Length: 131
Image 1 (cartoon, helix red, strand yellow):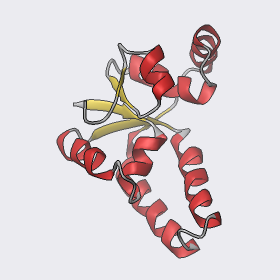
Image 2 (cartoon, one colour):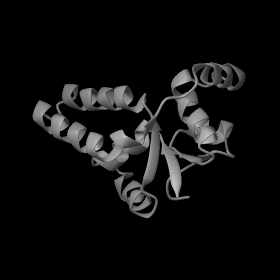
Image 3 (tube, helix red, strand yellow):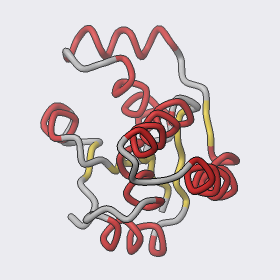
């Protein structure tokens, strides 16, 4: 099954978070994960926060980054900026979040996310891992 996944889901897969088991199970069952190119910047920011909090070293986040790129880089898509802005304006979400929703709609699939606002605003698209 094809799924668009947001950065929090990627982080849960790549890092030892409490959501890791449920996300890893989703990845094994539905490993056709698709992402907007934006995920790279967002995930790098997550990794930077881990370094600044002294939870990971530079070499550890570098290894995590490489693993993420190996698993996900070939599944990236550009999205239409006009659609992203329109959706963000109409629904009051961020343009970052709108990229994931637009991609899911473009690919006619679900968006896997932990984001409560996205789950509430887009119940026809957004799906919480493990649901």
